[in-house]
Image (cartoon, rainbow over all chains, first blue to last red; front, side):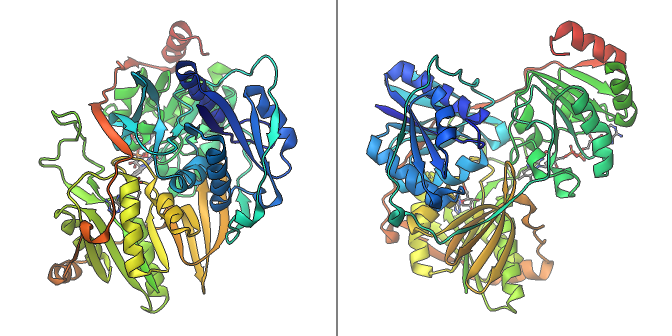
Length: 319
Length: 250
Ligand SMILES: Cc1cc2nc3c(=O)[nH]c(=O)nc-3n(C[C@H](O)[C@H](O)[C@H](O)COP(=O)(O)OP(=O)(O)OC[C@H]3O[C@@H](n4cnc5c(N)ncnc54)[C@H](O)[C@@H]3O)c2cc1C
Ligand SMILES: Nc1ncnc2c1ncn2[C@@H]1O[C@H](COP(=O)(O)O)[C@@H](O)[C@H]1O
């Protein structure tokens, strides 16, 4: 039995989310004795693959045609690797990368897939998976039957795996350029320079909602408090829709799923779609001027106040 | 050009869902249903593409499921779809099954573009689009927040975890849409009335020769309730004190 972990890298090494996928794979392997392998895909990625090898043996698919993560190309490589290694399970972190690339690969392999897994258990030899539905109002226990079971796991649900005592080998695999579809062209990635950590990777996340009317105001309150706490800044959908905050910061059902040690919600009402992204945070603080805001139902500490007064006071007292 | 828009019928997102006694479904009695919000956005985009081509496009909405799908398909017609088709199927379907059925419908309809939701807000799976693209061996662009059509080429802005990515892909293609692509229109009363008169085509799933093999099976559903007891604090000082005393974060 082989578990293939699709590694998402950041140009240096393994992304934090992928380390959670490794953790999931290790837990499954500990039970069924499977061998774990990581697949690194890209161009000129040898050095990165050497870093990834700290977490397990690496298969490296390295070719100019794989410079950018285009779904048709990467999915073909993943499906080939799964076939060649007779993978009994394929997994990755539930990021937009896997939701694009890995789902297509699972389609090529016969469509046996569950996304956004937050837990697992065993029924004899059978792997049962837990995943949220209906924006997290329901947890379903599901099972997969079919060829090449494929799973994405939420990094909020599994701790980041620790590196091994010594790195494992990196093995290059052949990429047959003739088999890679090349019709889609990559036109670049536009991301606003963000000096803060990603919301999915920070210990503390400070999020601001509709209470903030402009980008400057968001920075003045939400950004400043995030910086003071060395945390990440997040937001609700309305500010992204309004173009006030870039979409990489959106927390929720259709944004990012976070579970930091501390989540501070500033002027956020607590719609189920937002709660879906943050309700598993360890400690939740809500500041809202409406005492009946539903965010208080999921908070540990609630302060009814105007954020324009409470945040400057917090900044002052945390100095 | 023809654009296919698969739409799913889902519980209204403003409603609180509850697990039924069988622990395998959610309670549907009295539950209002809507077109999956992402699919409404896909349909809006399809209509806008037709409008930009001075009507030179046909927009077809497809639902796969029971008789009750007629209601959401009529909503689609009222918004401006040209035709509506329900693929009748009474067994439970997972995204693989739906994708296999849609593959057959693409074979029948030969659209240049399939525009669909990035995820259904009931199962939150997000699998059907890329599955369909892989079955058709068509290029795909997921999470579109901008779509430009020039001749036979699409330029798509995609919302990723790291920013907006741009792809250029040739038709035919599968595109899944994200929330910020557009704001779906409300159907006007006259168009709602007109949609009532329109014929909805029916296809029996057995005609399509698709074998329904479940890949993803739900064994159990449980409602999730918040376990937290909110402690109200009266001012910033108290908040900081409590956070410092009761957690080790600050
Ligand atoms: C399919 C779908 C998917 C969605 N996905 C997401 C998602 O991923 N993430 C997400 O966040 N949303 C999502 N939404 C939107 C969601 O339903 C809500 O509309 C959104 O979360 C509301 O954002 P908000 O809390 O910032 O704004 P509002 O609901 O308007 O709340 C603003 C809050 O700020 C308080 N306030 C105002 N001024 C002040 C002040 N000066 N001081 C203190 N408090 C103040 C108000 O009392 C209010 O409670 C989705 C919706 C749909 C239909
Ligand atoms: N039963 C269905 N009928 C029509 N379209 C569907 C159906 N199920 C899923 N879809 C389409 O597939 C998308 C993604 O669904 P899912 O993979 O379930 O998250 C939806 O937004 C719809 O466009």
